[in-house]
Amino acid sequence: MARRSLKYNAAVLSITGFLVKAIGFFYRIFIANCIGAEGLGLYQLIVPIYSLLVLVLSAGISVAVSRFVAEETSSGRIRAGMKIASLAAGVVLVTGVVVSLILILNVDTMLLAFAKDLRARRSLLWMLALVPPIAAASAYKGYFYGKEQVIPNAIGQVAEQLSKLAFVVVMHPHFVNKGIESMCLLATLGLMVGECVNVFCVFCAFQYEKFKNRARPEREIRTRTLAKKLVRTALPISANRLVLSVLGTVESLIIPQRLTLSGLTFQESLEVLGRLNGMAAPLVFFPSMLPMALATALVPAIAGAVSSGRYAVANRQISQSIRLTLTMGLVFTAFFAICSHEIAEFIYPGKDVGHILHLLSYTGVFLYLQQTMLGILNGLARESAILCNTLTGSIVRILLVWFCLPIWGTDAYIVGVIAGSLITIILNFLEISRITGMSIDIGEWFIKPLAATLAGALLSLLIKRIPGLWGGAGRLQLLIPMVISFAVIVVVFMVTGVIRSEDIRRWTRRNHAALY
Image 1 (cartoon, rainbow, N blue to C red):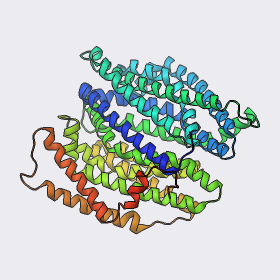
Image 2: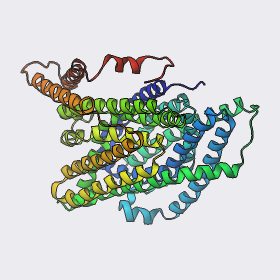
Image 3: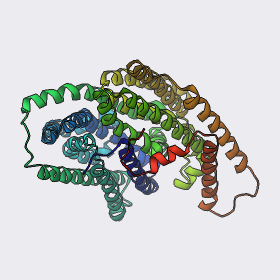
Image 4: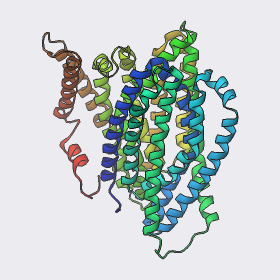
């Protein structure tokens, strides 16, 4: 598999992200309509614990392996890159087994302390048992990203979503009418089946790479040298993810508890958590496939450009990525804000998600930009800056949730997300500017996109209010205004020059030319 350009890799990751998110939508809709808001709330209480473990064990390893493999491959040392990946996978696997065993032996204590609901016990046990291999596979994923070969990881992600959806559809009759605990377990088993299929695909691809390069002559590098190099890079990133994951888990766990102080029962607060994190948030995060693809592809691309002294190339990549993320983010922010009730009723009929989706829509552009900047700073090897900046924003967010949620309800959560993300973005850009000398392009990044957003939103609202314009019945009556509103917003962005013809060509052309 040949190395590809940043454009090709980001395009493949974007297409993969779209497929993954689209299949994931069917999964979310099926689960949400089966177990309801309270069931999703119960599921959302334990998923952050699982995500915390996987991220802490794998985050630093994945990025470190990606960077070192990129460096070794550019120097022609293919087998050294494979050795780094194998060593990293072994370290994560052993560490994961130890951590999981400790937590399994204390699962009841952990549930009572954090989730405060023992109905999630069986689900959490399954998650803990499969954390080690799932986390270890991140080393192999980092290997392929470092070699700029995104196809193996893309195949694994699509296979994961397909297998997860197939599992819950086939097994649903065996869990239905057995209570929320059993339906939560169904969602958990679906998640685990999908993750295991992903691990299997990536592991097989890595073994094929080892077989293909088994006879390649190359100077052997000592394992101790590789281990020291790996730990020095992985620890700051892991510390970053540890702090951020802990804060994210704390946030998910305190939301129901703080909502009870606003007058809701614990069951009602679980329903709010289910609507917020289980229903509305996946819709807003759906477009994040582009910034996530950029963030992943930017790490080796920027690292390679900087290491070879091509700073102008790195700056162009950074500037175009920020502009593209802002443009995409504002398009979807306008769309979700205008059509929130139609989208919510179309996807989750009768679940009363429209108001929460409308509020959450304003957070999208900030979260997308934060994701892209994370990839930029990782490519610039500024892990400590990522930790400090994101920690600052997360603390502000949690403080607002803690003190204001009992007073303002879910509105306080939205304010917290926007305030925390905005602080992180400003600090991240100051760090990027300090390293690269880049300045803000106010016209291209902010004035033109914001003007196009307001114009597109206003025009869409006017068209939606034309009496008797929308025909059809049922869900078709919801779908038509959604499609037309989105089309109007995109057309306005194109007419005003915010979305350019070269942007479309850049992301649809399949050649090996440089992205910028």
